[in-house]
Length: 109
Image 1 (cartoon, rainbow, N blue to C red):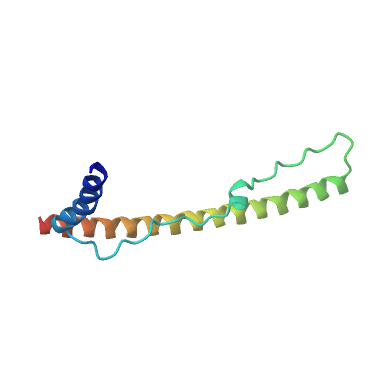
Image 2: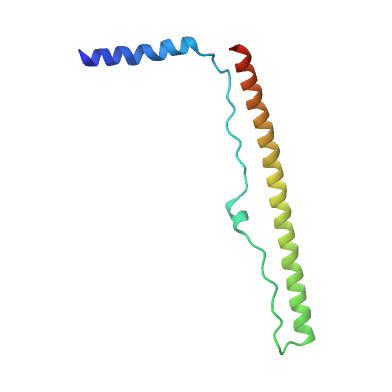
């Protein structure tokens, strides 16, 4: 007896509640920020220390290596900056769509 009451209640409550609710036509999936984990973990290299007995050629070699490392660091930072700005723009657009849905639901009440 009790199980039939539970089944009856479980069947009718959703039907009664759905009659009182406004159906939502479409809900967009949440915005995902696509920045690779490996890019997030990358770090700029530390400038090389000049040894005490370094020759002029050694210093030039270190200079070129540091310059190359700084260029890679700049590329990495520009990539992250671009991805974050894309993500922020997408989040703003998503928030506007949610605000529009909320406004429509408020008008229907």
